[in-house]
Length: 367
Image 1 (cartoon, one colour):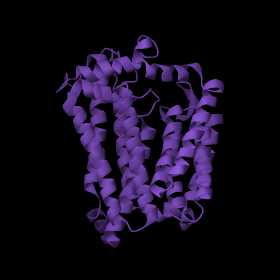
Image 2: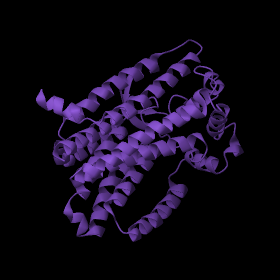
Image 3: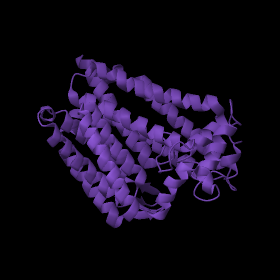
């Protein structure tokens, strides 16, 4: 009991409530979207409540679980993640063109969401070793092979959004590790070569069209560019204070596809206006700043790498999703953390914050 009280005393409640408020934003908009159905269907709303409750339980579980256990188990977690990604290619269900899901009754599990957590643990353990300072090229290649195996397996599904997230997560960890700029130049050249090859030999027509639509969203506003065009209209229509919960014409009249997931920020902007969008930014800012501030008291490299890696992942997903909603980036199927509908994404992000909480708690106790 004394240990529990000690942990609760050093628990970062500001970090916890910032994530919780983001989840509440998502719930409000899911309820609003449900009102726009011909027959009000609250199933997604109810399922999201369940995901959030389970997510919070997992957050506290991992907040009280010694992160050193995860650190020392990084190899086994990596192996488990690899097995899961191979298994989903053979036994997974194809949804929206990607074989990315295990289906259990009314619930779907997307392993790629949990791979993000495993990859950060794996890279944090690897880069926290002193070996990275001795042979930087060798460590770059080893970490690259470890990361790109996950990238390749997800690319085979295919899930372009998760591929981008995992690849950029690796780059973020390289930046945190302090690799020389020349290595990033080499990587940039390799990306250009690989992307050019993929464009000619692998990317499907709809994936090419998404990129072309990003360059000029108006060229096919009734086809591939429809989503982006409607999202931009929704964001602009909200103005200062929004049209009100349940009164967003784009989502209520079904002009905005995937309103509960990829384009939920557009729904928030339309119904809650600039102030609602500003609140979303504020809570993300609080979340990210708490992670960065916490690193000042963390006295081990693994903890610093993991916390900054987690913050980098959340920022990247937030940035890409919101940029998709305002037409600044192509639509690549990346959810808005803690807000978009989806159990796998919700649970994996709460687990991520739970591990961050444990690192913060132990650093405060031992500071």
